[in-house]
Length: 511
Ligand code: FAD
Ligand code: NAP
Image 1 (spheres, protein in one colour):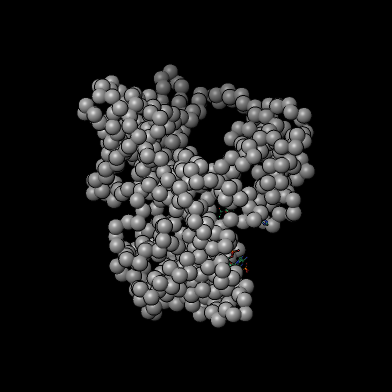
Image 2 (image 1 turned 30 degrees about the horizontal axis):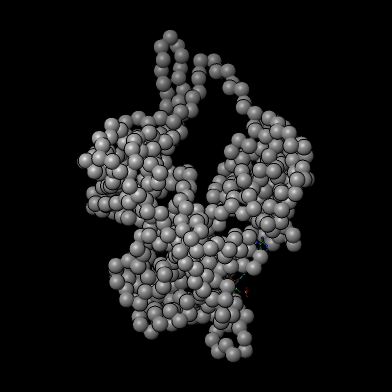
């Protein structure tokens, strides 16, 4: 993010789009844009960008782009889809830039086949191999010969089956994944539509059908962890025999990279909102009855709301309802509620709208995302957590997981940076945890303390880190996790590297 000029916030942008001003310069006309035409609009004062086949005149948006003008200019006059998806694939540009729409990209005429070659790109499924991009040439010389030029796929061993009794429908997914668990299975069954997503490493397997007949709201999920078998059990509303499971959706029975799978949202009910500090609240959301979703440690979800007609999406990291002191492996999540600790900014577009939600209102919550792997902690002897403000949120589940399930762990240290004493989240709970568990230590550091503060003060720096970040033994295995405002995280990572910690020993939480 770059600092934006005053009057250039997202809210200001929404206001401008609603003002009726002609933002495309085409007086509402939509045109077909050729590649040559698009390429001509590649300057700051005249900038068009193509995203998912639609061309936008982003010139008026330049000063409002949170990533800055230079980032936007990287896609000037070209197809920016990949660039936009790489940075924030969850942002709904179609909604945000709808008033800047110039038109569609003109379809390129297919080039005549060269000599005796025809080049094809297909999406095929051959036996057990799912091929995403498959490029080959067919040579035509009397008889047909096929030469495979490029192969990009992955062996799929995931498949599904279904069976029924008088009262139940059971969908069985065979993943053959040895360590399958509840966090890797996301099921949504609402209004006769069943969607089941299974995460297998960096891939996602999906079943998605409009069910043949109605089922009750409750859905049960059974997982045979060792053999990787997942059962989704649905209760028939009427005891009739089903001829088929239902009508498949477009992506039914596909196995693709997780990052290529469209984010799925379901509506969750706000059931409580409690104060944590003067500006931070704990929101408790309830998943719908037909949803099975567990957010893994270190991952976040996206919340989606429509704010004055524009769809806005922001990431948040679920926490636990409180910091458990008992270290029981029995989880503190009941599978029904998601807890989010959210700071409400007085000028924040999204958090102001969140704060105005009433108990009983609904908000869309996405599937989890994030690249943190619990296995990183599993072998660690020393775990060091550096948090700035709400950068504390991923540390909550991480702390609980480490103290509960990592047997070789010797020390856990949280170094928590805040502006003032009033900003410290869950201070009491953290201090109690430190008293209760001798492996755990917490250090609060304030950047803007009052004169009564007797603790440490300062900002993240090389000298502060060299004082607090230490291995418990000379060669102990350490993992350092860092999360907070982007510059805090970036500087912190650099200081840690300067202090001799390797890339593998550091995990930075980012979007
Ligand atoms: P914004 O409208 O974005 O503004 C926030 C504040 O920053 C305001 O004071 C605004 O004036 C200022 N500001 C914003 N952009 C600029 C700019 N370019 N230049 C100058 N000032 C600016 N937050 C939580 O509270 N809890 C979480 O658990 C959490 N998890 C997250 C997980 C991830 C992976 C990421 C990336 C972020 C997470 N966040 C979390 C932050 C969250 O996504 C939002 O960014 C935050 O809630 C602010 O949203 P907003 O729309 O209300 O504020
Ligand atoms: P904050 O209260 O503004 O700041 C917390 C601490 O960080 C303060 O001590 C502050 O000191 C310091 N800090 C702020 N900017 C700094 C900088 N540029 N360099 C060094 N230190 C800096 O923090 P917040 O409002 O709670 O914001 C938390 C941030 O964490 C948000 O940006 C949010 O997006 C991010 N977050 C990310 C994730 C994730 O990626 N997974 C999860 C949760 C939150 P000063 O006195 O200098 O301001």
